[in-house]
Image 1 (cartoon, helix red, strand yellow):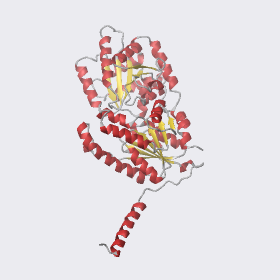
Image 2 (cartoon, helix red, strand yellow):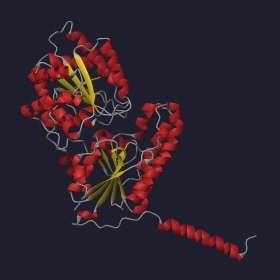
Image 3 (tube, one colour):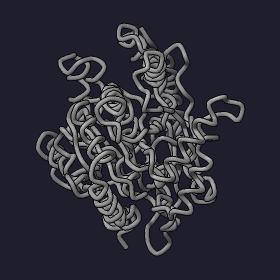
Image 4 (cartoon, helix red, strand yellow):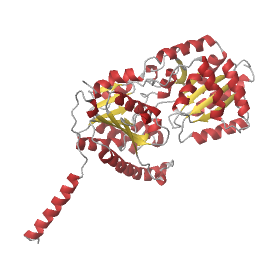
Length: 469
């Protein structure tokens, strides 16, 4: 049996450990928001590559413009918006440590084993970043997806630091997981339940479409503080004059090919024809993920090329530039190489590139047509690439077989939709080989759609939440 002194020693040890834990908990936010907006500090969390999360970067810039401080937290795998780097006094970038390479796998069976280990690693890095590496904030703005483990860590940190949690819904995390495991998999069902439970702990919600707001109300039981915040083009995306378009197109061959590449002259010839209107420039942007099926584009281009050299010789040659990074890019490049060997793309040249923010904006402004292959895992999200294209005055053809598509693209006004490779091939033939007046009208519609900019939309929706005074 324990005597009195032993019990006293145990109590002292428990008290010491408890005191140590309490003393080392994250500090709490105590700012008072008034006219001094610098007291309003906001953490922005991206459990992904910051450079490939333009919407969250735009959030950071908008908050900083209103005089608040921003801690932007995420992985740093590609170039960050130059305006963020130039505004380091107001926006601090905090880089998350990536998971060890051995926890990264595409194998479904190994994913079930390594996935939980990767989540544990992410929990630890998020806890350190949100609780200790950054100062206490009035707001924590979290990008979703991914919701695992972001939501649970964000909830705990917000509780301890007296921070208000805001979720920016780009899509639903469980629907992305279902692309890998299947919609009936137990982990997908658990993910959906987890997402619904922790979503209710947030103080406010932004979402990219009206349709998504409806789902949050109907299926997630969230009835207040849901604000659709539609993606809008940022100020660096502009319609180019013919002179600026021509200047950029002159540099395009060197952006796509090194100086010593033997095919450089072919690209220079093709670009010259694009400037004269004899050939066309087609642009698409992707993260090379399963919710974009580029086999649809390849099938359409194969049929287009075949028709252009047989029954429809008036069809122009096309240069296709696909921008972005992601896991399925290598398979796409292998497929293109095989098609070239089989001579199935004689009237089509396809290149991939990862461009700077400035060059990407100029590429969109120089193209004749944009393509979106985003199929939407949930049916209620929208591809931001289309918004960027409209900002540069670029009309769009896109996969439109999902609920939210009409919120962005008006059929025959600023773009066209398709639901299979045949539909895309027909759209290309109509716009490139038919009535050029139709393509001109679509461009006018795209320019008109792009006039509403991100700053206006953000001030109207998010600005009233973060800066009510």
